[in-house]
Image (tube, rainbow, N blue to C red; front, side, top):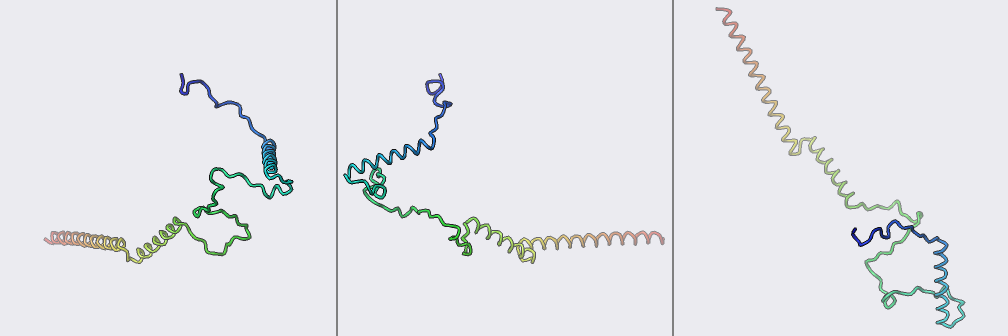
Length: 157
């Protein structure tokens, strides 16, 4: 037997949708009923119904009127009210990205000027390689010259 105790279930059944007109009619009927009940309680003529109508509060909502200081009411602004000329604040990520790019640019300037540690190390290695290459060239020249002298000595004998 499958999990749940029976085959099938509620999934796959035909769905029934309520049309917008039906919903509107239900809301209108509920409002009308609430107005009638309010009129009966007041015993008035019902001429000023819509202005006095308030929705019932749930729980202890109606006992105290407390304003939550942490809740910020969202206000919508019109396009004409927007201040596009004023300074815009960047997010933390955007600020960090800009700082990172500026630091990279500063480092590249120092590196090209030869002031960074890595540039100094690179220059030292290049100088060492050039010195070794020069020594090898001198040693090669010396061996070729000494070899030619030896050949010339053998020719004169």
